[in-house]
Structure formats: C-alpha cells, structure tokens
Image (cartoon, rainbow, N blue to C red; front, side, top):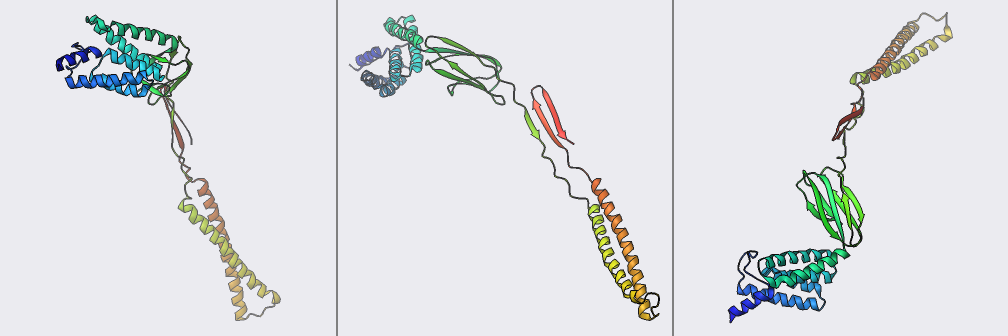
Length: 318
C-alpha cells in the first residue's frame, strides 16, 4: 500500500527517474513534497500568493518538478512580480521540454501552458539589452541598483533582462574608474539597447604640503640683537655725555681747573666716544641682520603630481 502511494505522489508532482534528480526521493520526502504542494496550491487559489510561494518552494526543494515550478511562476505573477514570474515560466518550460524529449509526454501541457504565459509576458514587459565593449576586472552591472552580473574582466559584455514598462537605471561600476550611468525608458513589448563605456580613470592629484617659512637663521637673530643693543647704548652714553657738557656750560671758558671739573670733562669725552662707537656697531649689526634675512633659505617648493592613464604631470611653486 505504501509503495502505491509513493508512486501516486511521484505521478502527481511529475517526479521521474530522469538524471535531473540527484538522488532517488525517499517516501518521507515525497510525502513532505506533496503536503507542501497541496498547501501551496490552496493558498494560491485563495489569492494568498506570499504564503503559497513559501509552501511551493519547500515542495520544489524536496522534489523538483516542472509542475511545481509552473505553479511558483503563477504565484509570482499573482503577487505582482511579473519579471520574476517570467523567469520561473521559462525554467518550467525548459524542464518540461526535457521531460517530453525523454518520452514523458504527460509534461506537454505544462510546457504548453508555460509557453503561452511567456508569450503574454513578452508583450506586457520590455526587454533591455546591455552591451559593453570592454569590462575591467571586478566590474559590476546593476539594474535599478540590483547587481545583475559580476564579470572577471577582460571581455565584452552582453546581457539581456526584462523590465516593467517604466524608467530603468543601469550602472556599470569598476574599481578605480568612474561609473557609466544610463536611465532608459522601457516600453511594453519593445526592446531597448544600451551601450555602456566606462570613462577613463580619473586623475589623482597628490599634493605635497607647502612648508612654512623657516625661522630666521641664528646669525640673523644675533646680529639684530647686537644692533638693538648698540643703539640702546648710544642713547644711554649720549645722554650722559650731554649731561656732563651741560654741567660745564655755566662756566664755559672760565671753569676752574679743579679735580672735579677735570673728571667731569674726562667722563663726558669718554661717554661721547662710547656713544659714537655704539651707534656705529648698532648700524652695522642691523644692516648685517637685514642682509642675512634677505639671503635666508626659501620655503620648500610645493609640488603636485597628476597621474592619469596617458601619463603624468608635475606642477608646483618654486
């Protein structure tokens, strides 16, 4: 009795001993497959496509069958995903054709029904053909933000996809290259062909940071300090010399030759000499500091290196 039930399950789901099956299904897997299939069909017939897809895919996993694939396509179409439904109809048609060619004629209705649905969806959807003459390694093609094809690079690309009658966004991306981006208007029953060419790699500019002006050389600082000191001494000793001269101004030409007056005259002359020497040293030192500053080492040149596929360029300030 159990053996007859297994045979009936296999007939209902379209199972066979064809090489497409990796291993002979067990009675338990056949029971589970039929249970999921029946639940999925009831859910589909009641309009609950999301639940139907869960059950039907569980059935297909346990026992692949063109009939189950066909019902999955119908549930997807009921759910509103016509593009995915078209893919499942095409798969159901291919699987049924193989079974018919192997002599299992009971799958001809499945093949015919899938073919009819495919023709109807071809009239309702639009086809996109994407071509790219050169695709580098690691490139990715995206349709409406979803990856369609990852290429190994070094070859031309031609890809076909179905799309709802609405604007479609196609992007081709590759490492180190600018994206190729196209928005295409897709119409029902029409084919739109798109040629994508990746722009050349963008130039990369590497700029060396400009160095700040170096600090004044130590010799410049010393000379400037000596110059300032010289002028300061000139001011001090010059003032002292003037003070001594003013002290003798009252008796000019008739001052007594006292020790105090002689000392005052001597100190005034000495202060005057020191003041003269100081201003001379200060002037020379400041002149030297200015020359050293003018002749100081300049800032490190700023360089920019541009790298592009056709070569390299160097620009900068010196």
